[in-house]
Length: 425
Image 1 (cartoon, helix red, strand yellow):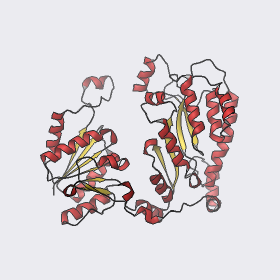
Image 2: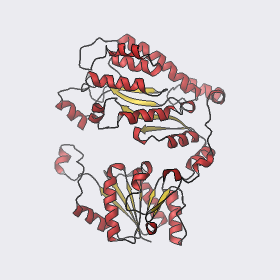
Image 3: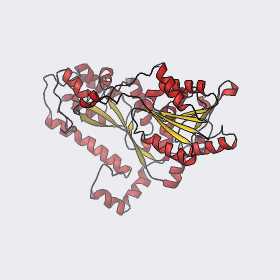
Image 4: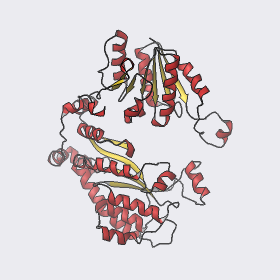
């Protein structure tokens, strides 16, 4: 059985893909691995100017050349992120034309977060979750000629039946984690558009006790400047979903960037307005803008005529502006609308002349620190609050008692995670 594993990614690091490719090679000796680089790295000049390269535009001739290189197998399995979804679809379609007998499937980030789109590609299956054990189970069934269309972590497309789609649920990873491991865990680096209620509910039930999500700004203009063009309404939806599970978690934390000289007063106000509207509870990780040398951000700043401090400066040391004071206030209290409007009148852009509030910004941090400490104590979580107190509370058994008294355990219909996802049809 010949298997071709194909990675479509910025470079060839592809850590996740390499893991499953090695696993498949172990399962099947006739396995070849291909890396399709999607950026122009091979440029001596770009090496001198320390640029990583620009995204490639693949023409029909290049698509055809790549497809001919990977189509000669019984199974062709693609892996890619959302940014290369269109390229994957084009290659899958051409592979189908060259070798209509090949079984094609698509895994990786895009089919996991957006299976409804990935299944539209000219493939026979998509992998919607962790792939190693699921692929092993599928390969065994495929080789022996058994029916595999009910296997979990896969959606299947029946080309003999008008492209009918079978949508299967996830493998019981979270059930196994909850029953066999039983440890709490956190997820960092969450992107607002990836937040889905069903996933958050499952993860919370399994033991997730903290989420950290990047927001950066409440201004559409500044989000585009940061190349994070998430619509503000999607940020609010994500916050509302995470807040729903607050009784079972430490407050979700959201990253915000302040002290940006590119921002106008309207941009700063837009961020404060977003924070005022966001579903509670939450906490903010507020960072003062710093730039890394030889990056696009530094180039943008220089083009605007701004001299911004570099990353070796303390990015948690905020300028004591009225806007930054308000961010700390909003973390612990949502003021009435009229009062908030009066406060907004005093907000100024970073580069505008304005009073400084060095004492006030330290004072308003105190209620926030107390709130955070109590919330972490309630869940017996000392990864942020370090030192001997946590050790003593754990050693004496007080932490276990606090968890039993205060921390709620989420209860759900466990059969929910094993039923077929017909609702997604």
